[in-house]
Length: 459
Ligand code: PFF
Ligand code: NA
Image 1 (spheres, rainbow, N blue to C red):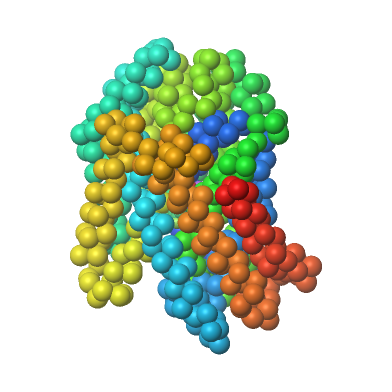
Image 2 (tube, rainbow, N blue to C red):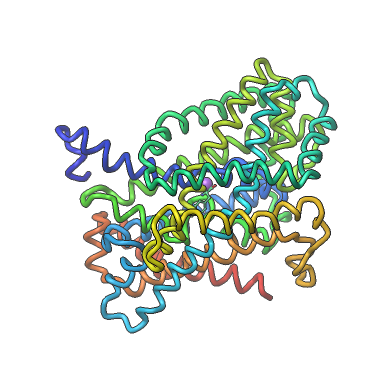
């Protein structure tokens, strides 16, 4: 409904609303949808968890995304400056620095293990292309995966390749080319997932797989499961670390924040559900374990590629597109810390990227070792909720389930209690009842939901 959506402004439309959607979708759609969503759904018992996740997207995720984009557009600067400018008369001014700090820390910690998983995808391009998957049994496919995990140096090589891809783009400071590629490659990924869902329908496990995803069995839902569902809503939509505040600062006035946020969220959720529908039928048709953990997609999809017609081709294409999706997300994870080094430490972009990237890469080694030499090292294992968690598991758990919800909580409090209601009404330009619904959500529902889930888990 904005000025740029008028009939005469086609090019303006392209470079504004669409550009924002491309950047935000590039950040949102990634390993979170295709790697993480299926494996945490499998670990947390399926349907009831999925329902809670969808509820978290609708009730917490979309309102927080709207709040982040709105703060960004209103402030028009980097996230910390935007927050501080808007909260002009707030005595808590320094507190908003914390949001920036959480964002920088979360991005840095997430990228360290995200890149290791991105490396798995890089490795599987070769595995699929060489035809090694064709006609293999589930056991053989499982052996290929455990073989990869057992070799720290191979993992390090692919982790390095992935991190280098991210660093090159961030160092150059131009993402526009990549964002344009999103218009081609995201739909390609979507279509390929549809083809895989089509294959899954013939696998003999489709009814079971779909039932696992969509028939809630609440006896399988734990309080930790709730925390994971909430955390994943933040992780998958790239919320709680001010990424959307940064992107929102480039969104021209007059474009609907609600519409764009909902569009990005629907695309992201659609990709995750398609991934689930492609994977779980294969799991059940082959008698595999849905709760197999982080290796789930690498133990199931290759099996499908090994059986389906043109499997080597589709498999190769799939892992290439997965790398691309992970790449655009990885960039948005590294960007905040690089900007911070540039602005606060006065370093140039190349040096900032090199320092941040190399430190992050080095931290990734701890995640690599968690998969083999340190697989028995569980530093916080004495806490019941964290029992059996390796360093890799802990980084994943701590960032998605603690840091991002905390960052999101701060954003909700900011929008709900600090920012002027009038200014927000103007930015969001919603109908009165829609605004009220959003306002009540960020003011009460989101903070209470996050606080409740936190408290339940601590007790
Ligand atoms: N949303 C990304 C995914 O689902 O893979 C991961 C991510 C990117 C999280 C950027 C947070 C972020 F700021
Ligand atoms: Na996502």
